[in-house]
Every structure is written in structure tokens, then in C-alpha cells.
Length: 166
Length: 177
Image (tube, rainbow over all chains, first blue to last red; front, side, top):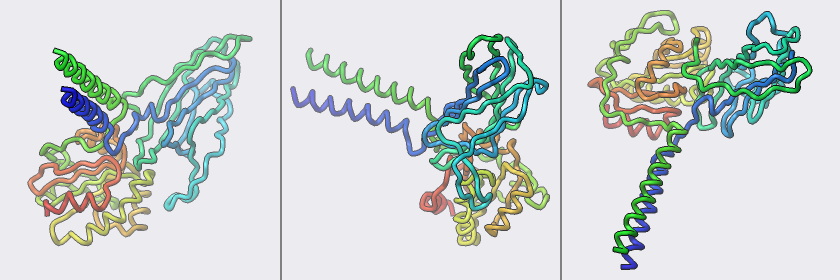
């Protein structure tokens, strides 16, 4: 009786393990918006902070990364992207990649307290497992803080449905 | 009675594990969807320009063992596996193996790269729209590289999300040639 119960226990555990490995497989990939989560917040009425949280095992290409503010009439100087990690690419030569967290400040050309601006990111990245994601374009509608108010709340980009070549 | 309760408990654990597996599986997407003899008709119906601007209907390779590889020059893992494809193309051309690349890229970049690696099979320019098509064959995230192997009778024999390693490719094409 006891042995049979133990046998059943083992079977149950094996079944459980099987269920897990079946869903893991040899190649498991995150949805692009999870692999490269894009968010933004208003630091003050004329400064936007854009952030990419790149999941472990994934990277973004620096030269494919572009931020912009909508409407363009509000956009200030082009943002300065921090240097990435230099990687020697056989075809493209030296390329820079970002892993982990990337924070970029996007200045507006004038204060726009309380205005909701569009923060747009175009990005392209790959996974160490050996695949690349298509370029994606994400947009966040970000309300800027009022004059004198502190930094606003972080707004996450909504999961993109169809983001590329549009 | 007690035994029954134990069984119920174990089955519940197994079911929960299965559920969790499915749930967490949802968070990820794994490659290799079951090909289940799906027809490659939509793929074979495509006509795309090659790297020299000549329109190439894929139907011209009907009856061959066709390996359609979706790639781009901006995709390093894609570029890395292609010299191996060149080798396979050389070795098995006479047996009816035909590779076709579909690039989500522009002509100039494709020309430059194909010259560099002396590509010995057509490099068609598909743009992102053609890669969109790969979704139909199980490439839900539309990642690159993605490869579809079509048997001589026009059914899909294998699909591969991510690099197709030589030993796997060998395994897949051997019974088809």
C-alpha cells in the first residue's frame, strides 16, 4: 500500500516535471515588449526620462535606437545616448549594444507643464539564444508634471500588437 | 479510501503542475511548432525580386527539397548560419536540395553580404511583409532567423525558429532527398 502510494507520488512528480519541460523546450523567447520593456516619466515640465529595461540574455543595438517627442514642435536637442558595449561585428565592424537598464533624458525645447506628450522609441534587439527581433516602434502618452511639481509617475509602454514597419 | 484520497491528491498536483507549465509557457514562446503536414502553398505562391532586381517566383522550385530561410544582414545569428547553408547547397544541389533566402532588408546590404560569403543560392528581397508571412508558419514573434523546409510534394517538413544547426538540418533533409 505504502509502496504503491510512493509509486503514485513519483508518477505525479514526473508528470509535473514533464509538464514544465514541455513548455520550456530548447528555445524560449520573451515577447519583444517583455525582452525590451520601455517606460518613461516626466522629470519636470520640460524633461522626459525614457528607460529601457533589457531582460537578461537580451541586448539592443545602439545605432538602431531612436527616441523622439511628439509633437515634434516640442522636441529639444537630440538626446545623447550613453556609450554601449562595443562588439566586433564581422559585417558591420564595431557595433555598440546595451544590456540591462538604459536611461536617456529627452529635453523639450520649452516647459510644457501638464501637457501630455508622446514619447516614441524605435528599437531593435536580439537574444543571446541566437535570434533577432524585428525593429519595433513603441509610443507612450506621458503627462508632464505641473510647474514646480516633482517628477511624475513612470508610464510603461502598452504591449505592442503590431509594431514593425509601420 | 485513504489510497483514493492520495491518488486524488497526486492527480491534483500533476494537474496543477501542468497548469503552471502551460501558464508559464505562455510567458515564453518556444520554437518548433508541430509542422503537421501543413501546405507550403502560400509560400510557393510568392514572387519576389532577387538581389539583382529579377522577379523570382518560388513556384519554380516546386518538386525540390526547398529550404526557405528568412534573414537580414542586421541579424548577426542569421549571418552566422549562412556559410553552413552554402556548404549544404554545394553538397546536395545535385540531389535536388534548393536553398532560398528571403531578406527583410534592402538590396544594397544584401548584395554586399551575399558577395562577401559567395552565396550560391538566390537571395530574395522580401522586406518586412514577407517575414510577416512567416507568422503563418509558426513564427509568431517574427524573429530571425526562421527557416521552413518544404518537401518535394509541397508540404512543410520542418520549421525552425532560430539557428538551424547542421546536424539538425542533415537530419531533416536526409529522408526528403
